Image 1 (cartoon, rainbow, N blue to C red):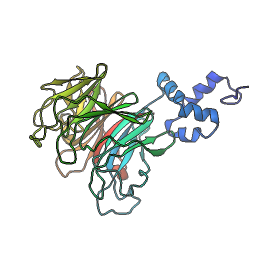
Image 2 (tube, rainbow, N blue to C red; image 1 turned 90 degrees about the vertical axis):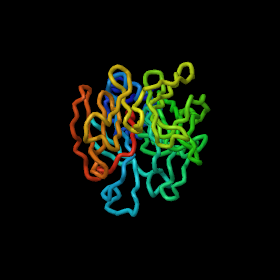
Image 3 (tube, rainbow, N blue to C red; image 1 turned 30 degrees about the horizontal axis):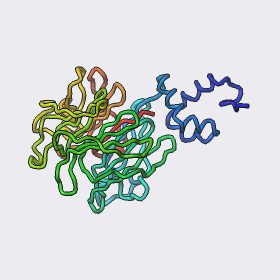
Image 4 (spheres, one colour; image 1 turned 60 degrees about the horizontal axis):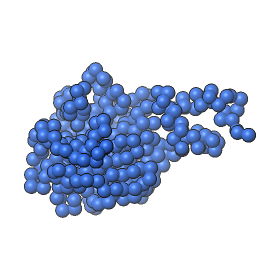
Length: 335
C-alpha cells in the first residue's frame, strides 16, 4: 500500500501543497519522509514547481565580504563569498564557505546556475594566487557543497554559459598568460568534462552568454593584443557544434566582462550604459523578467545594487550592511 504524501489528503491536493513550499524550506522538508526526499532530490518537485509557475530565480553573487559578514572579525585582505538575494522576498543569505577554503572563494572564480544548483569554477587561490582547476557544486536542496571533477586544464578569465544541466566554457588564458581559443563542456548531472571544438580566435577576458540555442563568447583579446579588447564574438551553435565569428557584435576597446545583456531584438547590449551609477565595475544578473545590477559611478566609490524591470525602470535595492561589498561576478539559479 502506497503511503500518503500528506495523511488524509488525496495525492493531487498533497502535491499542490508541496509545490507551494518556499524553496528555502526544501532542505528541511526532505527530512520529513522518504517519499518527500525522493520527490525533492529526484527533481520531480522542481519540475512541477516550474510547470505551475511556483519556481523563482535568485541571484548568486561573488561578493567581497564585509567585517559584518565575517562576524565582526576584520580580515587583513579582501575575501569573497557567495551571497544570495531573492528579489521576490527581498531575503539575503551568505552561503557556507567551501570546505577547506577558510580564506574565502578563489579570486576571479566563475559562477554558473543550473536547476537548483550553483557551480563555482576555477579562479586563483586567495593565499598563493595560483590558478586552480577546482569545481564545486552547491545544492540548495541539501544546503551543502560537493567537490566535483576538476576542469580539464588551468584557465583564467574565461567565458561560461549554461543550458539545462550543461556548462560551456571557452577562452581565457593559461598559466603563461597566453590567450586561449579552446573550449570544453561540463555535464553537471554526470560530473563529466568533454572537449569541444576550438573557437576561431583566442579570447582572454571574454564574457559568455547563451541566446536561444547558441553560446556567445563576447569580446576579449588575443595574446599579442594584451588588453586591447576586440568587438567581435565567437558563437557556438549548440545543435551543430560549429563555431562562427560575428564581427561588430560588441564595442571595440571595451571589456564585456559582467555587463553583457541581450536587447529586445536579440542583439547584445551593455548594462554599463543603462545608468551612470553602475558604469564602473558593472555586474548584471538576470532573474526572470528583471535584472539585478551592481556597480558604481566612479572608481573607488561605493557600489550600489539596483533592480531593472522589463520596462527598463531602475530602482535601488535596500542592502543590509553585511551584503554591501563589491560584487565581482554573478549568475541566477532557478529554485
